[in-house]
Length: 122
Length: 107
Image (tube, rainbow over all chains, first blue to last red):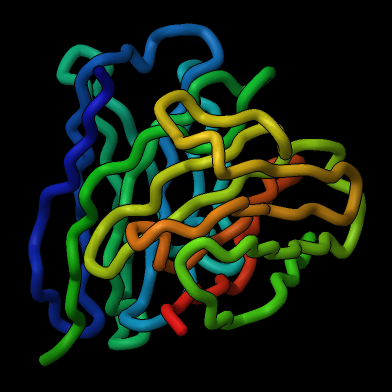
């Protein structure tokens, strides 16, 4: 059974840096083809894809956020981290991480974390 | 970027109704499309992958079809637990893009 859980601060001040951790079980990010994605959802709005990190450490970012976003992985700890700099109130959202089963045959997200609401406010 | 346009944006229906939601891509995405259901305060749940394959554990009243630029999600007989918001997601090209969502409400 695959599980993922996001953790990190719930309140961040404008201009600060957000770091979220996704801790997962039931799969390994060293398995060929596997990835972990990040998605966010502002309150009452649609889902927005932030990017992906793959088993081979390849990373894909939403170009609109590329200068502010960094993904890293720690395979031994079964964790992926998201770092976003220069936070703004418009970044207030629920942030989700999700499992990508196989880049070559199933590039969608079949399991999701519960999400964590991050509020940007002074 | 590939734009995914969902229609309708909202829909009122009754238990037992047959419902269809459409997603149109601004360019071809082959069958690299999934459908997700999201209930308030919860994470999205994948219902359909590869445009028409039913995710394990998902009731058979859900079905998907389409390829290229036009896709549909059909619920054959609405159940009370199906009232939620539905999203399509294309993963054919980066950036992945979601539709804007279809809110399915009880009539």
